[in-house]
Every structure is written in C-alpha cells, then in structure tokens.
Length: 212
Image 1 (cartoon, rainbow, N blue to C red):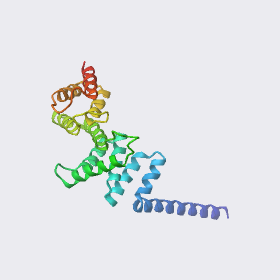
Image 2: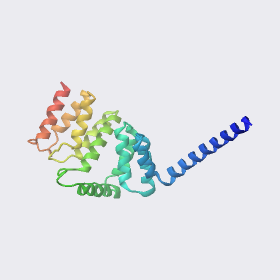
Image 3: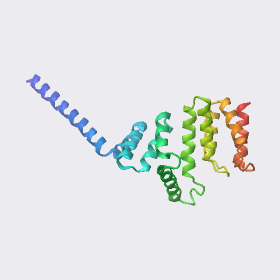
Image 4: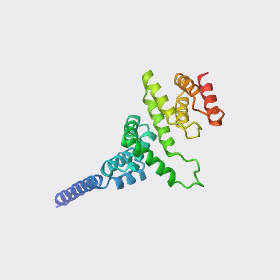
C-alpha cells in the first residue's frame, strides 16, 4: 500500500513538473514580453534581455531591440550588445539608420521638458555602444574606428551624455593610458568641437591626467 502511494505521488510530481516545463515553454514562445518582465522582476537580467530580443524579432518594435542592447551592455555581454546595437543602428544610408534616427527623436519628444530638457536618447545609446565597442576593440584599426564612431556621434557643443565622453570614461576607468592617449589626440585634433565648452575642457583635462 505504501509503495502504491509513493508511486502515485512520484507520478503526480513528474506530471506536474512536465506540465510546468511545458507551460513555461509555451509562455516563452507565445509571450516573450511577459517573460521579459518576469525575468527582470526576479533579477534574471540577461535572460530578460534575450526575451526582449525575441519579442523584437516577433514584433519588429525597436523598443525591445534597444532594451535588449542596454541589458547586454549593462551586464558586460559585449559581443551580444554590439551585435544588437549594430542591428539597431543600421548601415550608413540604410532605411534602418533613418528609422533609428526617427526612433531616438521620438524618445526625446516623449520625455517631459521640465524633467529632462537636454535629454538626447541617441547620444545615450551611442555612448553605451562606444563603451561596448571599446571593450571589444583589439587592433589599432578597431580602436581608431571606436574613436571615429564616438566623435562622429558627438555634437560640436558637448554635453554630459556625449558618446565621446562615455568612451573617455570607459578607457579612464580601465586605466588604459594607451587608448586615452589615442582618444586625446583625436579629440584635440577634431575641428568641429567648441573648445570653450566646459565639457570639452573637462574631457581634455581628464584624458591628460589619465595618460600621465
């Protein structure tokens, strides 16, 4: 009798586990956005980012692609983050590049002016991307390309969230004097920057201190 009860309990437990796994799989496949929010709520951020990317693949909404990039960048999954940013950013002259620009402008317009008057979502995303690309760069050409990207996405009137400043913070934090030297030279040689700007002056100052 005891063996029968034990066997029944084990079968019930096994069926419950199978049903739970099946339900998890169904929800993951049919409702990745819900799984994204659930995983994020319990601290499984990398998995949450993967679900965000899956939801993007289903809906083609850039919100989910951008979110998946941000999570990967935040958690140090640099290769994944770079792949997702490149998909978000698109090629020069492509429809995606135009869509990216329009998406960033929409995010700027959705912020309350009194709360974030100088909010620049494109600068924020590109700044994070520049830091990601810095961590991946190995060759001299790749490092130069990171500088070109950050400087190219930075406006003449630098602000705290400018991509070139985000890149500088990444290499200074890494105590990478060689890259700091490279970036300092590129910044000082860039003609478009307004050099009486306080952010520019602080940028140069901190890079100079990092190379000493």
